[in-house]
Length: 207
Image (cartoon, rainbow, N blue to C red; front, side):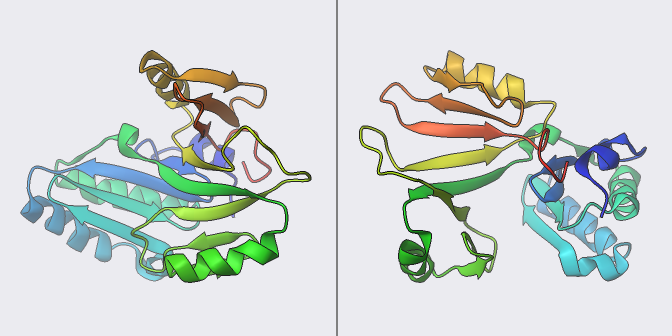
């Protein structure tokens, strides 16, 4: 599989953005009928890639995600959209995960898997089988931490829009906790200290 950097260096994928292991594009539509036409067109060009395809159809837009960075399939899908006069909006692409700090992950993950009704991927990540809810992951702690919430959100956004998202959050009353790992991630907090990480693919091993 190509890296995120290689994917974005390829031509014809300007509609698409890498968020974690996915590449996604959001296409703005003017009606449900227009969205249905786009989805039908996508169905005709993805071929075997439909195994890793996710499509979210709404009245005002269609979000398309690929579970692998397939340049050719992304180009085909963009071609379908362009043929219908439908324009992509990269600012609408994101992935939201809930992350829990845990001392002993195997002791708490079964509880959250059952409570959420999720499936498990690997040793520390849960996912919604029908892709309606956010992912749920564990972050290993070595010692118990007091004074801070042990649960936070991770919001993966397009790499070229991350700084604007951070700036908007700060302008909305947030504060910067740490940019030590930016642009891989920034740690922000609201006025009461509740934390969130704004993340991109840049700097990750698969990038």
